[in-house]
Image (cartoon, rainbow, N blue to C red; front, side, top):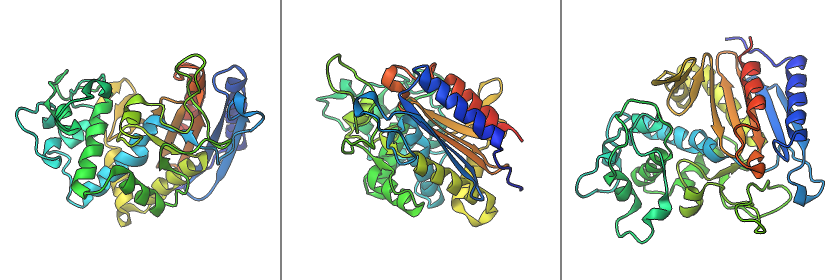
Length: 344
């Protein structure tokens, strides 16, 4: 499979639009890293880490809350390892991989495959604060809940990944953050961690929830991840653009090694469509599939794109949620990213 590099025009268009969306107030600043499996790497940056941090400019070492990229940076590869080790089975109920649950557990009947592909039918709204003071453990509370939809339909559900994180910790007998730390260390990701982290000029703050109060800074923006101490299967990871690029390159390299790499085999299996999202978009295992491209977004203003056949990747790291909900504000940048990485 030939690697198709990004052209100078590709890079220029991405740089220009990143500067435009930052100038228009979509985010204080941001970084794009794009490259290929064989080593091309371009770093594009614009704006500031945050206005209150002075003239500190973002770089590929700036730490961002990647939000739901946690799903593909932590939970998805760890599920793949556990499946390959025989610790999880994609088509068995998740309750089989959790501590014993007493009584009826309709949500616990969702399979690992359904949870990771967002087809479980579990309740979509997740408010872990409503479980405060409950005597039963979290996995049991989640498993006992009734289904909200018929399994098999696509609906993005965070609680499914919370259950997967709890299942991973149980089958390994080790906390999720410990499992993830080893994974990242093995892949050469030196700055990717579960939060919280110390505040500094190298850490991008996110949202101000209460007027006059400090912004969320170095801690997970996601409330449910925060209630779990910053460690959850759906959110809570902080990373740098550099590490996102390293991770993407490692996935592409593994994919191109064919049968020699377990990670590559898991990626290939994950690119098989599981359910339609809308015309032109399907859900694989974790990843959204658009033709030859797999991608995922994070609520805070992050994205990761892979084009395994052409050997290309692209990562976007911003703290666009600094100005409120980020999806609409950075949609043009995400649209150009998908168009650029899809081009051959």
